[in-house]
Amino acid sequence: MTPATSYDDLPPGITDQTRYYTNAYIVRDGRILLGRKKRGIGLNYYNGFGGKVEVGESSVQAARRELEEEAGITAPLVQVGTLLFTKEGIEWTFHINIYRAEEYEGEIVETEEMRPEWFPIDQIPYGQMWGSDKYWLPLVLSKKPFIGRTDFDADNNLKKWWFGHEYDGGVVSA
Ligand SMILES: Nc1[nH]c(=O)nc2c1ncn2[C@H]1C[C@H](O)[C@@H](COP(=O)(O)OP(=O)(O)OP(=O)(O)O)O1
Image 1 (cartoon, helix red, strand yellow):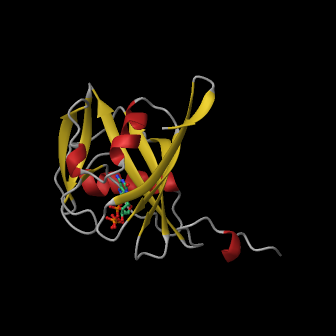
Image 2 (tube, rainbow, N blue to C red):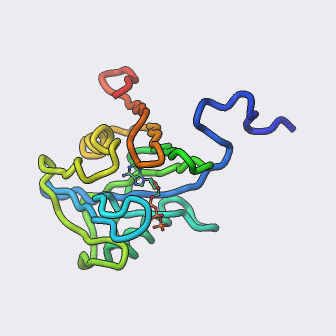
C-alpha cells in the first residue's frame, strides 16, 4: 500500500505527526468570550476555550467537553475553521478545529485553566493573543469558513502564515 505521506514530498515545516485540538468562541450581543490562560503553553494569552481531542471522541465532542471544563458552559458549537499550527522544536503539527456559537447554557465560571472575560468585538486584545489570531479571528466573527497555517518559532513569534477563505465567488489568501 502507498503510504499517506512520503518524507521526500512533505511541504517545509510539516511532519507526518498530527495532534488534534479544538478552540471555541462564544460571540453574542457584539461581544466575544475569551479566556486568559492560567497555565501551559500560551500562558497569559487570551484565547478561545479548547484543548486536545481525546481517544474515542469526535472533534465537536471534544470542543463541547473542553468548553464545559474550562468555562463551565455548554453551547451548540459549529465549526468555522481549521488551523494547522507548527512550532519550532515541536515535531508534530497541531490540527486545531475552530468553533463558534451565539448561545450558551450555564453560568460562566473561572476555572483552574482559564479566566473568562467578555470583550466588545472592536476591542479584542490582539496584543495579548497568539500572533496569528488577528488574521483569522475576524473570519470567525464574520462566519467565513477558513483554513490556515501558522508557523511559530521557539519563542512564540509568528514566522509564516497563510489563511484561505472563500468570498465574492473566489478563494483568496487573507
Ligand atoms: N488561538 C490560537 N492561535 C494559534 O495560532 N495557535 C493556537 C491558538 N490556540 C492554541 N494554539 C496552538 C498553540 C498550542 O501549543 C496548541 C494547543 O493549544 P491549547 O492551549 O489548546 O493546548 P493545551 O495544551 O492547553 O491543551 P489541553 O491541556 O488539552 O487543554 O495549539
